[in-house]
Length: 433
Image 1 (cartoon, rainbow, N blue to C red):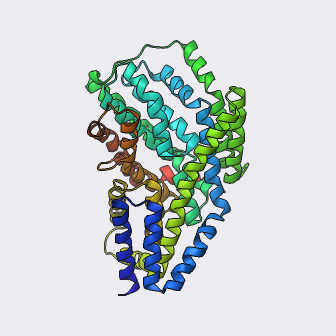
Image 2 (cartoon, one colour):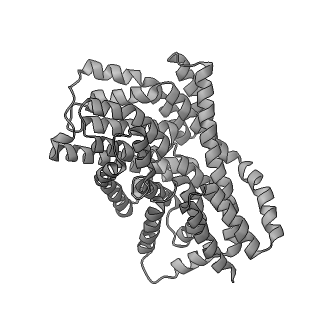
Image 3 (cartoon, rainbow, N blue to C red):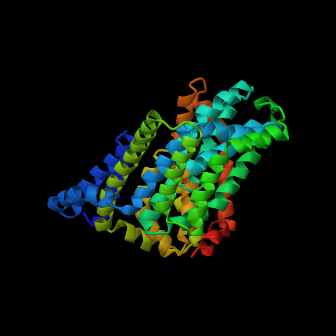
């Protein structure tokens, strides 16, 4: 059996292991080890298993993930999540679908702290669902709104997915962060429009809230000044070139500790919870990275990525059709896989194709997080839907699935905009040196 065929068989075997419930990192490591032994020999496979875990983790660039995850945990345990939600509600709650709009805006703010879809969804599920239920919002609409708005966690800087993509492809993480700002803001607006239209068409989904005075609005906004200043300093400082991405993460952690102290939330117990939660999240990510690196080395010796790049670049069709095919694959994988595992699995296969077809790598990074956002809310899995069903067990998974489709249409619309106006993602990176 030639190496390329072994590469195909190994990839299929790895996907089967994941579907059977094997941890993604373990599945990739096992398939990579056996595949490496089949292509080369057992000694080479053992050598990869001995050296890859350390060489993968001994990477200065990966420290940025730990720093931003810790910053998000410190901010969460400081109570900023709830204040962000209340501030958005005082400004938007009196509009049709106002509580849903508030949730969407708050998810954007929380995403700017933690950079993770699942963390944003879980946080806002705990904060927003009880409030929406209290104001009489229908459960399916509420759950679907939180599940889909949670995808904004990776559509705004500092996105963990974009950080991993940048590390794997040797791209500027600062430019990737700038590339996602306009598309992330646009997707937030599309979600808000969807919520507004749904409530206008069916007012029974949720009533208007009371209109707050301007004094109450500015008071609520003042309550989240710490969060806004922290985001501006960290993200603005990185984009302006005042410090590197790693330094920005360190500044974020330091700033989050200062904010916690100012809010009188800083304590040994709070620090312990933040460090433990950040450690668990980081360990999960790093386990997947180690498995992916082992699997990627197997793919490299199998020559599968190069063969696929040559095949796709030689097809007698427009390159956009090839890209649409890649997007369909991502949407399918997103329905059955975790977003980080999917990213680490597919980048070694598809990135050479993107390079061969001469797509802008920063534009493709935004496309990646968009299609992964789609996968996070699509049946038969849709990780965000599972998270919300776990937060509020009175809402069935089927009800949530029914409610996400209008928001999923907003993601599809955003993808179409990215093809029609690629400058949405490429304009800001070109301004950075």
